[in-house]
Image 1 (cartoon, rainbow, N blue to C red):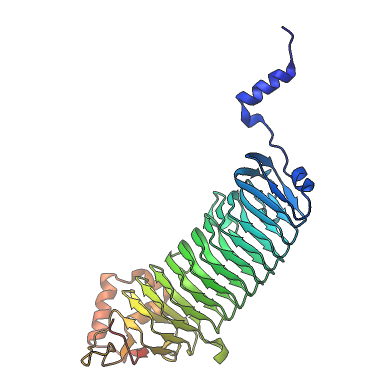
Image 2 (cartoon, rainbow, N blue to C red):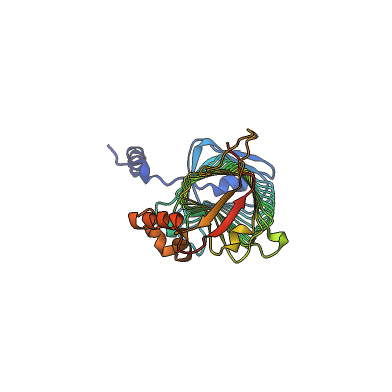
Length: 402
């Protein structure tokens, strides 16, 4: 029988399919006409790949685009393109290059229903406007928290919609110099900061579910945000704020549920009337501190919220930072007054004073000993017979009873 190397190679490829090199996707993209649809047959395709025209790349839920482990897997350098139902795996590991599953550099593109795994950065939008990042599942590389990339990252990009994505094992969802974006209905687990806004004003953050992160939503120099209807739970590390504001006023924080965090919301005192926060209709439950304000003055509006069984309902860095805020119609689980006329409003104001709390408010490291028998006894004695006049940090004249 005559020896045939080609038949031997075919046999080996059938027995050991991992030896097979997947066909490159780029020639198929290049052959697709402008505005055309490339429907990939089931199988695995080689990357990196580049889209430079308006077209649709459809993986139909059965095609895999595998990167070379040294670069970004798929780059969309076009406007009006769609990438959907494709598995995208195996980006590079360089933070300097920002190796990603998908890099978008254009306007009006749609990245929808894809599964991204083993990617450093998930989806990176760079100078792209009006894009839709919808319904993707993104899982970062299995690396220590500080060495991960962002699940979704926007840089210098406006009016994008990030909606309904499920993101896991990443560093952050980051918006840098990116105003007027909408972050809607996403789920994020196992991250450093679930969302970070840096110089990114006028954005909408609504209906997201953020859990098991170091911090929830961090807002830096980004005024006029609307943060509504989000659930933030188990934020403990790196400050552990459910929502943190720094010089980012004129924001609305409404109807959020912030549970079991180190701090529910932390914010600096407003620098002007235009920097005031409106915190309305939220639930703060089982946090170490419900709200924390730092600075020498106040002025924020805290209305119609529920403060339920937080270890400290409110903390301040200085007495005026709390008492100068507007407090009204909030429910307080530790309110001890009555409602004789049955109108649902307490007959007397709810007032919070600083007793032994001053120790850990003024010396944060002492917070380690909170709830210890010694400090509990000291707090009891301070309330029973204060050594000095306690300072009032807030008064809610209309506490809700239910």
